[in-house]
Length: 267
Image (cartoon, rainbow, N blue to C red; front, side, top):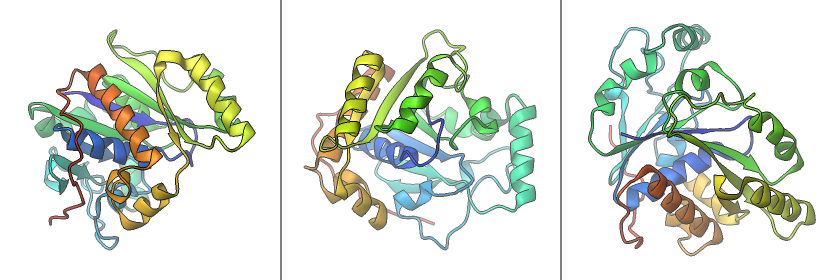
């Protein structure tokens, strides 16, 4: 059961969009995928057609329930989401305290799903260095750092490379990889930074996602990029990245043909 941690040292880079669309792409290739939201913004669910008014999630009761799987929602063929949910400030603080002080807290809560054969778990983390990231980074089989093709992300690269954002993997087979998001080749700075990342990161760079209007349309309609515009540059980029992820994780990759995975919300 591979565990993929999607994270970023800063907010606003499109981390949740990348995590959601990576999940869609892996699911349509035949993998069973569960995406877990560890970000208190509770925004991941909105990429999978969960109604805005539905605020159910695992965090509010994570302290009293040993199994979080009852809060999982089906989002499409082979695709499931575990929302963070609406919480009070007290519930959030209790959750973060458990993350910091109970070494097996996440493994306990996800114990039922971790036993599902061939399931890929994608953890969408809050931005920056935080309790959730500290709790899960050591258990991850793959850690994907999302950056933007901008000066702010470029300035953070030394911090990442010096392991001041992510600790060195405990698992010797685990490695850190990167995705550069919203690269705009029409703009000189964005193009130059993209080329710098390509040269610096080399095979650690899973791919670049080009700036594309269909991404905003997909987010607004709570659907996958490949559902909104399957022949767009962003859809191609995500598909390319998902195939690299599948190869690294040793997943059985389908033929790559397009299958409709529009959100199917179930209560």
